Image (cartoon, rainbow, N blue to C red; front, side, top):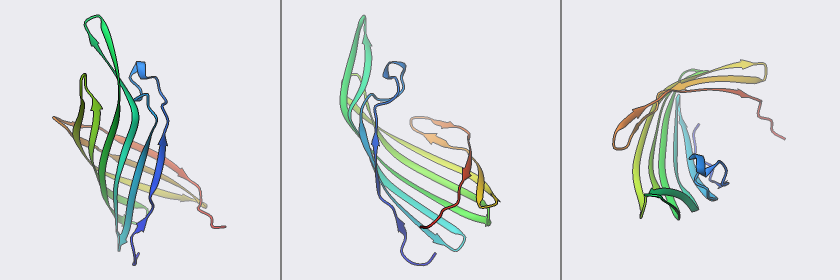
Length: 165
C-alpha cells in the first residue's frame, strides 16, 4: 500500500551438493546475496531484486585427448530482476517477470561471462480453503543468450496461514 517499498535483504549459503561428475552442481560452496524491494500501487505489485552469486572454488573438467583436465576457479555472477503483477480479481493475477543474469562459467583456459535475459509472462490463481490457500500458476519463460529458448513452468503451492505471535 502507501508508504515506503518493502525491503528484505538476505544472504543464502550455497552448499556443494549434487554429483559434479554427472554434471549436477559446481562442486563449490558459495554465497548468494539478494536485495529485493516490493511496492504495491492500487492493483499493481512491483518487485525488484539485485544480487550476486559467488562460488569460491567452482569446478569444471575438460578432455584434452586422453587427458582429463579439472579446473577450479572463483566465480561471481551478478543479476537484476523485476516483475509486474496485476490483480485482475482478488485471487487471479497476470504476471510479467524478467531476469538479467551475467553468469560466469569456467572455460578450458579462462573464465567467461555470458549475458542471459529471461522474460516470463504468466498467470496464477488462488483458492481459500478455510484458513489455508492453494495457488496454481503457469508461465512461459523465454530465454535469450546467443539464441532464444522457451519452456513451460507450472507450479502448485499449498500455503498455511501467517500468524502473528
